[in-house]
Length: 564
Image 1 (cartoon, rainbow, N blue to C red):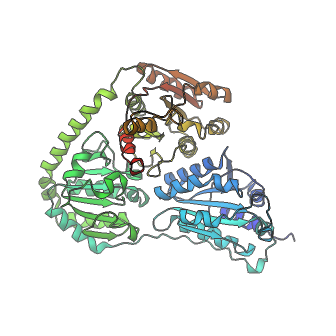
Image 2: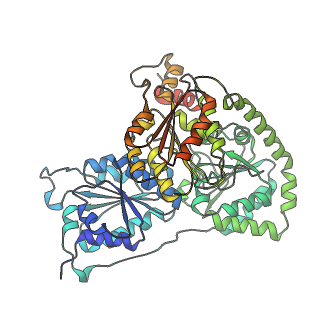
């Protein structure tokens, strides 16, 4: 009987976990796993760059709430993957990165692609594991998988030396462990106190973040909001857990979003964070009144109280907590009284929303040439109007404009890089979205700087028959950096901020896709219609105004690093 190897055990462990796709680029150090995945239920999905493989796996994790699996070879394959891992860390995306490395017997011999990988990645992940025993590989795959999704999700690293993958394993010593862990701590005792604090408030808001999505609690959130009448704002993967079109939803919690967010954040007397973190997007907590009362519900204990004192700390999964809150409200018939007490506050925010959007309307409807990027964002938003349409945003200013504009009706249907602000996520994210949702329309809006990073992922989209539509906001360069330098220095430094006119659409045509070029705002919608009707991966190269300054550019100009 042929001896079983470490590589075979790794492949079998992934199959046992029900993994559907491994996003990867092949390499000698991981070939021992490849050979046993070939022809199995696991699809090896190859990309053109390891960074793109990790971004695809990260998007898989975000959209499915199951760990996305990426696999890379040693040395440069590993280092190419690091940006995606860092992005997953700040976004709390469930991800397992499996990397090969040089054999244990080759250490300190200057072997091919030799580097010490564990010390580099350990600070970037929830946990880093290395398996140096072939028989234990199934245990480590199981450990990495469940660690990435238990508690607060995040990236996990698993290192497998090539000689361990090639080594024969002793069947008697193999433990084929398969453990499903549903790690959802619950603190129902705090539900009553939450209701008491709501009853004492006059101008409360709820900020629903990624924790609502990962807890699978959209219906409980909607019920809670309708029971209490509290205005709700959403952030990160919480976007869409209650539709932006719901009468009590005031869309994104970001203050730069045209609408009521700024007024609400600054004047609320009670802020209820549900699975959302108090970082940069809330000026590290300083956007809220000094007298505000804060309730923070999070599955990660250490997260509660970051940057501001929290009056009520609740370490709990969102879903059962909201169920208990709803039970209390309904059993005590508190709903009518709560809704009535907040009617004036809701009306105040509706007025603020109208006023805030009125100021932005001039840009959303601008007929200027070159095209105002908010007009482009508005045209995409209006065209992608089915509630199951998926929109991805990537870039500096471009991501800001889309974040200020996109109406989100369903969770998991809008993706951007998040707090890490990592460029290049766009095409890999869009490819994953289409892979998961072949019958849905997927549109990526991306900056002309950002599109250059993983441009060859267009070829993957075309070869794999994933017809996404990519709209490039082409402002001839690195707009956010250019404008921040103009604001801070009085001029932009051409080197590093100017790209110039590049015919990206023709490059996509050369790869076998469809290319289109747009200079006038009235031509945007017809181009989108033609692109989606074609059934091809399409690049629409839209020339946008290089002089427009986004709130993100203003914020970047004020970063501490720029101060003398």
